[in-house]
Length: 132
Length: 136
Image 1: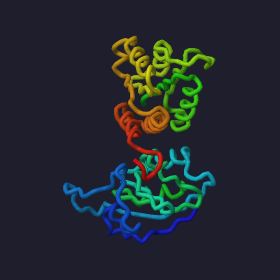
Image 2 (image 1 turned 135 degrees about the vertical axis):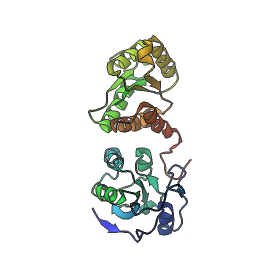
Image 3 (image 1 turned 90 degrees about the horizontal axis):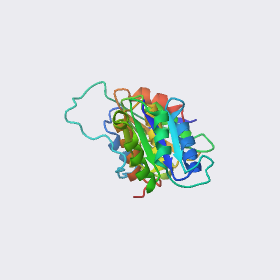
Image 4 (image 1 turned 90 degrees about the vertical axis):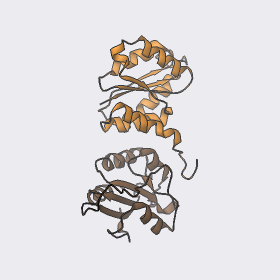
């Protein structure tokens, strides 16, 4: 596994903006509701935003069983977590959805950008990185 | 934790979907199947009595989600529910989800401890989730 910190800084608040910035403005996936402005939620130091790029190491790619483990792990966190397949220029999808995860069609060697936003974003990314 | 019932015209298809779902759910989720008209898989079709037995096999208070292939699977599943005592029937739900995707998603989310309606909602979301990225 190979993990590289992305250019996205912690000051970036929204995953959507981050993804668009990094991928040259891909449109958001209608099946992957990304975080939007939440006026009711005050600025909080607890809000974290974290993004990394991981490389798929499994020779069979990201398949159903490994996807299951990703969704199980992601579901343990409150943070909204998305993944985009940089190698396919894909939109970001919800990492807590097995069907959306399979849409990434991630083969061995593909680079996936994981992005988390929420109070436990750092821990979520750390836990997820080891699964690819 | 809810249980799942796989309903198909084909015993082999039901067994295969069951196998996939079990791999997604681990050992924690009760899953049963009602496929075909006979155990040997020779006769294709759906049978309300076999479906009722499958429901009774895994029935629990948290609920039972039924995933069907199509056509008479749905009608037979409805009839099976009508055969159940009211107290059992009210915890059963027919899912509109496609069989394979629905069973995979439902098994995973059932194993996460999500309630019946929530599991069904994510399973039915498969109706609007294309398997090829960038389509639909």
